Image 1 (tube, rainbow, N blue to C red):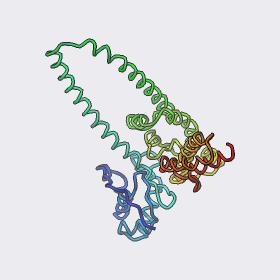
Image 2 (image 1 turned 30 degrees about the vertical axis):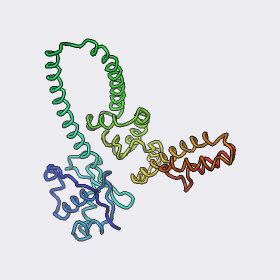
Image 3 (image 1 turned 90 degrees about the vertical axis):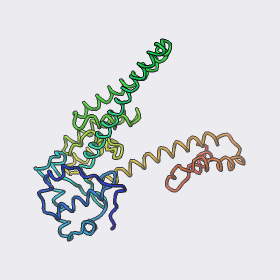
Image 4 (image 1 turned 135 degrees about the horizontal axis):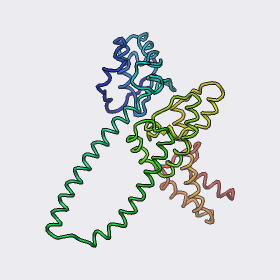
Length: 316
């Protein structure tokens, strides 16, 4: 089994040499850095102990020991999530558990840079406006015409801010608020409503023994942890057995649901256009649909125009 490397590069933070991992033997440290280099954008590392040992250039026994260390609780870890555990098993490989924390750290740095640039531009614009006013004087009509749009934009921003504060409080204000707010703003209002609805069953899972993620990691669009079926996860937890959550499989299921919804929407659109047409005219229309909806994924090997044609023939 070959490992899958992340494209680009993996940035090492200087805190790594101050972490408890640096107290481990050299082979363990080498394997840890190898995992960081191998993980993809979702923190997933593909490969078994032999694959990782080959890429880290250490004996297989050393790689197996390192993987055991990374899965064990670590009281000296500076990351409280998951009792200090660094990885968990996943289908065909491993998940680096603190991946989202460092992603959020990078997002915060980028947000701080954007804020500095915004302030610089605002100051520059203010200087330009003052200069313009000195030359031409104030323009009342421009101020009056701009005020309605500013008011509408402000109201929308206030509503979204209130919804985020509601979600942040419901989640227990746990995590990096600024990073979480950035991820929140990337979602549509419909998704934000789903996130709010997913918080109570997720917290019930936490109360039943599941490790709690920080809010920014839970919201991260790359993972969409909020989109999992937490009601089903709670049912598994309350059976008395810890659920074996396969993160990769959960993402696959969520994608299949989104693809199925998109497929059905396209089918309904085609049915509306085919319905009422003569059978001899449908072939020409279907040829047009093939070009228009070429990017829509098939469902169980069936094209959307084929399914639409079947429904029209059945009178549905």
